[in-house]
Amino acid sequence: MDDTVLLRAESELIITEGRRRKAERTKLLGSPIELAGKAVDIVIEGNHAWIAENTHVAKKIDLESGKVLQIYKGHTAPTTCLAFYQDARDTHGLRILITGSWDKASQARPMAIIWFSSILSLPRDLADVVERRAVAPIGSISAHSRPVECLAGVAISDTEVTLFTGDTMGVIKVWKLEKEPGPQPRWRSTLLDTLNLHRTRVTEMVYGGGQLWTASSDETVQVTTYPPDPSVTKPTPPLTHPTPVRAVLPLSLTPLAEPYVISAYGDVIRLYDVSTLSEPEVMGEIDAHWHDVTAIRLWLRTSRNQAGNTKIEPFIISTSLDGTIRRWRFNELVTSTPENPAGPVQPVVVSAVPEPQGSSRTSELTEDEERELAELMEDNE
Image 1 (cartoon, rainbow, N blue to C red):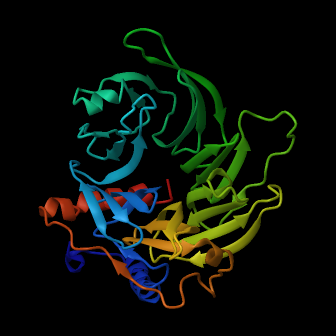
Image 2: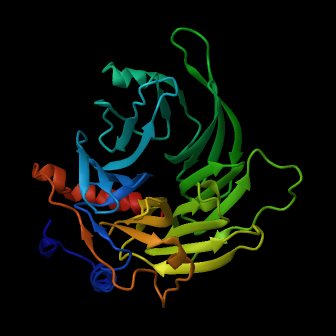
Image 3: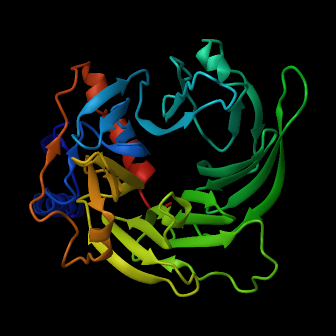
């Protein structure tokens, strides 16, 4: 879209010019992988990144070379989220990629497409996706008054799940999902609790080890014990930020198992030491991108030396509306500050290989879609 034909406010022009200058300053930080669009969500598997992109597709990218290995098409609107599913009973090791989009469609190849709103529907059996059968809902939950934008949960058993749902008003609800018996079982939902931890939009939730970590547009990251611990009498103080928080990554809940939390607010990535939850300490910070960060993930980079020994090195992967994936060595992030940003001494820009040319509909956004994407990422209600 040609910006020269649009009427734009002076304040917007100032922001655009500031981002243009910052893009030049930060173009080599974090060994960026340039994307055709903007990665809204990302999953790391081995040395590969799977991204949901606003160009209506999902992609598999080699984190070493930056090359696009595979493109999944089918959506007719920006792809906003993705996840993997594997049936524990499947002896063939088949995994299903599930993507969500604004198009509200449902397709399979074997890829299912699920859309989340304030009413969450559960597909009957993802085995239907593999066998190309229509996917029917097996239950729904509806208790939020505003749209649900993030989920977290844990499987207690084959027939029971604890689910957390967070909405744009800052309300988090806790559900018990139980699988009913029968040849075509449904899942029954029971509301267990309502957590009022935030003043406004919940942007991300991560659950594990009895801890629920949440990020919010109210400029905080919070952690709460769930189920509640009767011995804890004082709530853990929140991690406060200068602006709304978009993403959170508690490394204690990852294979790295270190007492650190990484958060993202605006263009900035921050590292906290939470060895003592009541006294968190900022360990490092980097002005990492020239536009809002959308996600942060852990990458355990594996490689082999000449002797054949396997080396594992932790990286932090960040995605942003600036159209890049950036890779930060964890030990560099620990010692980084805004004045001394993380990044290799001689960083290398790794560009993606040319991608197949499709219709302009799949590579460009309409004016309405650009506005909707901005609203999706905006911090104010």
